Length: 500
Image (cartoon, rainbow, N blue to C red; front, side, top):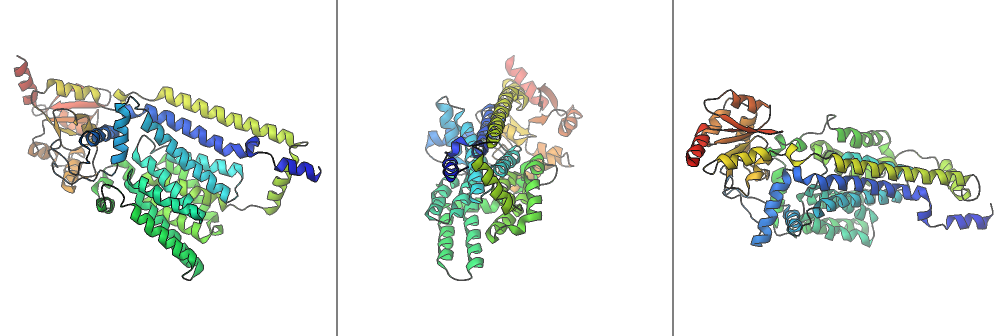
């Protein structure tokens, strides 16, 4: 091949090369799959019940509530920092305009943005299209346990964008500040932005060992990102909330806040391969990359919900650390140049076939996900909740074994012990909740003390059995696919008397 022919091949647009397109097709396929899940799951997601209720209040009152109300008898008046207020408002606004699909779709697109930054960071490290595609798919697997129409998913995009922007080391890095402002109004995980910026500043200090221009700039970015977290209606309360969450009792009662282990399939499929690569080849990474990977490894093992965050940050670092032969890279470039002239045409054809196969697999998985998502009745106790409101004469005082279920009563004439907001409930309320659902010695005394007259239990669970044994005190009056409803006999008697 002549030099002119080689230059002609090298000047081809990237979109004509299937190898260059492969990572982006992977991103699109993952977004389509997650979009199908997000737009189908909200009807059965208990967290969205209180999010929608909060958004309705914000739009109606033009104010953010700062304390729990009388809807909960266990913690009425407790301070509340609704850090997801913008997400809730958007959720309610979409529903008011008949676009309940909008926020779930945005969550899927947010994952797409995060994966796009993974591709760009891999390109920055000159990874091959194959390794870049592998990074995308590993990150996608890391999200499967925590993904949904949830504000924390928007936080994944926030951390991925901030890391990518800060790595640019040019004027573009300052875009991390407005990204942090938006992130802070969506989710409290925005405090990762100043933490990452401070880590970059520390790496610059270790590298330069002097008060260099790069160090001053990195410190200024860290300060600016820290100040950006205050640009919310919550002000310093957001900082207080984030610090309090470190020792919150919810960490012992919510599976996503549990310690990361091999029992998490997202960890095994998404994070563990990256950890093994970092352990084997991480020494080859730059000082800054090693610090970044180490910091997010600590975050990974703090809670299983951090698996996607770790993967999005660490995937380009881990794969870039793999040994690569310079001779092999030169041969690959030479073959790419020759591909348009002779035998390379077969490689190009194979590349297009691979691309089409990935796209078809993505379309198939998306279609199956859309068709096989469970109904709301199979995930929420809609039947038992309706039965309670139909048969109770007076507003009942309700305890839910799954506290998220009690969010069903936010717009009903009922009061409950605890609901899906969970964060603002004080530690004593959490202790009582654990006593009851674990069936400990005081469980029945707590129900009596709080004058609870209705309990929603998991069907065939431990609390179901305990209440079934106390027929003189509790009576099961309804059950559905997921739950059973127990009430005190007086509730049914008063309802019957009222009906007569």
